[in-house]
Length: 246
Image (cartoon, one colour):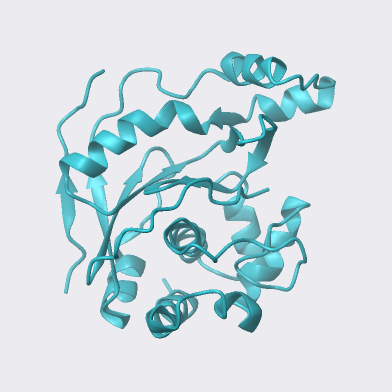
């Protein structure tokens, strides 16, 4: 079955742990919209494979137009950092210029999710991700962030990491996307500090992500945090990504 593509009209108006989860009962098949902002990933073949492999989750591409200038102001990221009390040095300022602020995208992505009656929406972007956590701590240089049903994934340097892991770029971005969706969906699922060669490694430093992408698996300890009823579909989805070849 081909991956469906939903169209939305223009709406006006190292990884982060999931910030908000809902206790609402999950639908029979969780519908995830995927909006590629600027990574130009050829996602349809790998999403087709994931959708055919299991019945719990449906990943579908979303096409829409972003409001002009959304999330693309590095000066704003720097100001937000300073507002939290973070005083970056020269090297850190260079890093911040490669980040976009997660919360700038959230209202727009929520509208797309609700308009298309999706359960989750994922935006794929080239820059790294920054956000302010519940303790007003500024975090940046992240691969992914989620807030409830809104997820963002960064492809910054991911093509190089994919090459080192000997994996297709599209498989790597699909893995980051799926694991962050699940972290936002299931209450106990989260990233661990220890680097185990697991897709739920927190990846500090960022280069540690190569180990997880190489093995392309969820460790037994991380999998045990999923509801038992969901583990089979999760494993099938990860296996489909791991077996994907261009």
